Amino acid sequence: MAVKTNHPNQMEFFAVPSPCIGVCQSGPKGYCVGCYRSRDERLYWLKVDDAAKRTIIRACQRRKQAALRQRSSTEDDETKQGPQQQVLFPDQRDS
Image (cartoon, rainbow, N blue to C red):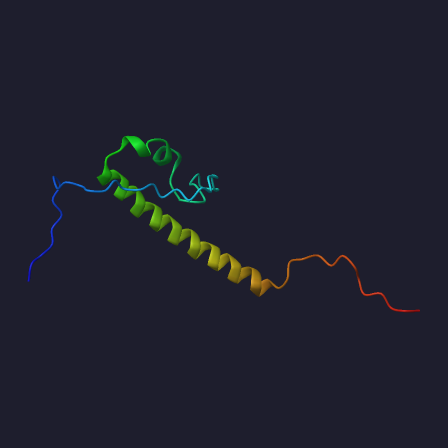
């Protein structure tokens, strides 16, 4: 059985595409809420080599998974507390 190895000098046929999905807003930790890249990762994307781009993409995937886990646990806590919407019209009884 052949073992697949990564060769650092292997020619790349395709450029690594940007993970941008067009939702360009910084979240509370400074990462983009669309692609989960840091400001510097977004700024220097066109200047780094493909190996660095793949490293950034893996980091973005980890950040997204962590954010989804955190969001899921926050939603679970909110459903345990009950509804959060304020009652605007209290029950009115006909007199």
